Image (cartoon, rainbow, N blue to C red; front, side, top):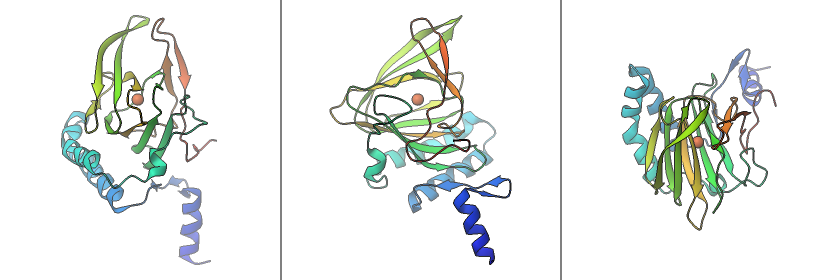
Length: 216
Ligand SMILES: [Fe+2]
């Protein structure tokens, strides 16, 4: 067996030995260039807050670029872990689970559950419009801290525990498409949904519409 055959089989499994490999589900020059710049920013920044500042200009460019995201990643997903036909489409993830890039497609009138992310990163709107409600923990419950309308090109930082719990609802007549850059494998980690009234939390793993998690 040639070296190429070995590595190609390993790549098909997503691993070489015990080491998982980076996955470019959308393997394009734009995504590779963006991820490369993000990784450089993370490695050269002394803190998540500094890394977020370094990444902001490049993230704004990605949201303003109309041509890099194929239609399939801007479509709802009827059988969705999020419910409501919400499509969570993985575009890239690091083999070590330290970074993921995905689109989240919320049909008109649909909303996510109140949920957390458990990682820092950036979230921005690419298509459509949304209302977002942000919550913080308040004793055993949740307190609504902010409600805002979001338009294409708007983006915000998640820096847990700040702004880590929210829900979004699509207010446009077409699905909203947001781009998430987060420092975990968001679709595959166990996180939480919340009852916004009682604050009761439930374990939650959203999955992705287009790839499995390792233990699926
Ligand atoms: Fe979210």
